[in-house]
Image (cartoon, rainbow, N blue to C red; front, side, top):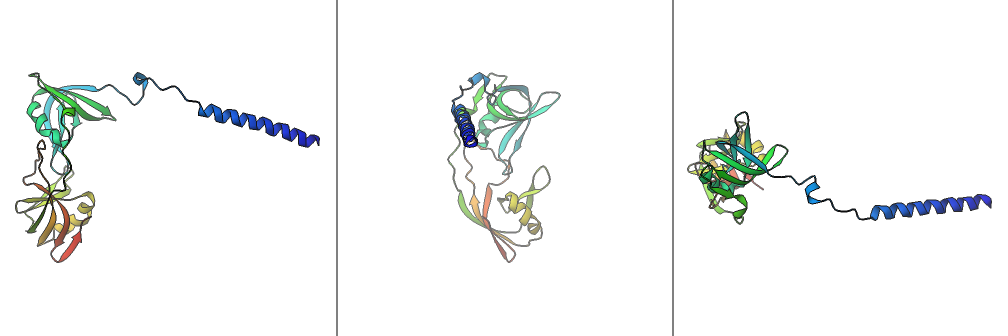
Length: 219
């Protein structure tokens, strides 16, 4: 009987401690003041000279390279802002960029030039997404598009540029180099106002391609 009584008292004590532990975990902690929040940082102010611009795999200008003397910094911006940024930040011109930073990457907030012109990236909304115009082209490949790693990212047929996705580059690039006849069904991109594309012809995203006698469906 004594053993049972002690067991009862011990279990009661453990139960009380468990309830107190659960209740303490449910207490609301005071919010972290905004100025002490670890994820919120002040925008970086970057001064330097415009060295060049870079593009995404589809040929749209979306990065500016800033020369700060001892180092160069790449600042990314959405492609639909390229036209407005190029008007202010011309090559070899001194500019000031305000940008957010995270792990050595920068995203443009605003850019100012020496003549006191300023462009705020938040003022221009991105265009509404569009699937593009359906097109069909056929012929022989007149040239390949390669990235900085010298890997094929697209090809040209006549006056059309066909882009390859990451998986398509692995699967189709070796076959394209050997193909004699190519037929492509795809969607030609709508070149929106603001986007500056460096490709010679408007890019096309494939939905189907026929290499000689073999047809490949593109998801």
